[in-house]
Each structure stands twice: as C-alpha cells, then as structure tokens.
Image (cartoon, rainbow, N blue to C red; front, side):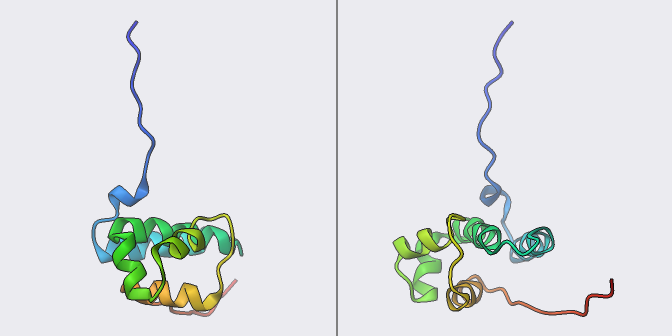
Length: 99
C-alpha cells in the first residue's frame, strides 16, 4: 500500500480577493467567542495572503512586530488591530445582537 502525501492546510493560500478576506474575518469574528488572540491570528492569515511586508508598511509597523502581534500567541492592542484592518483594506462594522 502506498503512502498518501499530505501538506499542511494554509488558509492564506485561499484568500485571493478582498471579498474572500472580509468573509473569512467575518466568520472568525462570529466564532471567536471573545478570544482576541483568535482574531489576531485570523488577521495574520489575511495579512500573509496579502503580503506581510506590504501590510506592515501600510500599517506603519515593522514586519517583525506585525508577525508577533498577529501570531495568535498574544492579544495585540486595539490600536494595532485598527491599523492592520485599515492596511488590509477592510473595515469593522457593528450590528445589534437580537438574541
């Protein structure tokens, strides 16, 4: 029996358009359940899809600090989140929760 070769799934390889990136972030926001590090990791996935160096420049951050902030190992400051979202060409919105 031959072995099946597998590769690690990387969502960043599948985020090609701004609409796909926005839909991914929206889905992650719904699933996060208050976990800011989870959202940071999702933003990191989108930043990798877009090009981490360019996102870092557009956000006014060093590439290294952007990697650390969006690693999912920590919860970055909200100011960093807002800079990254702007650099990604995305925007946050709010709606009433009718539960």
